[in-house]
Length: 82
Image (cartoon, rainbow, N blue to C red; front, top):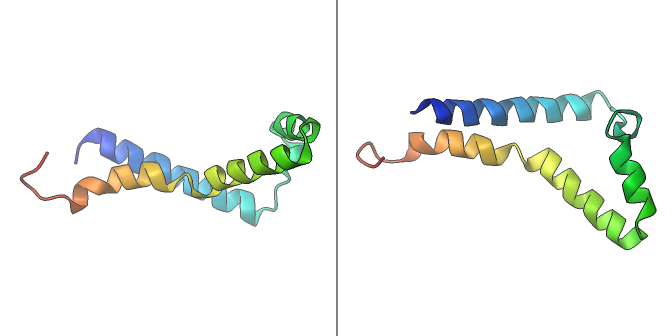
């Protein structure tokens, strides 16, 4: 595996640990520096605001799988292909 694969795997794992910390600590993101995003979403029409909110939660909670997948992918490829 190349160093960039280790880096992608590390980024994915750090993201996953950060997600677990946010969920387990019951952090209210509105009370952090991300409150600006919440205020912006509050000013949008409810239907659009809820759609964007849901999309952001999906990225936050499942986004770690993409860099981790790119980091792990070379392990499952054949030895002859680079």
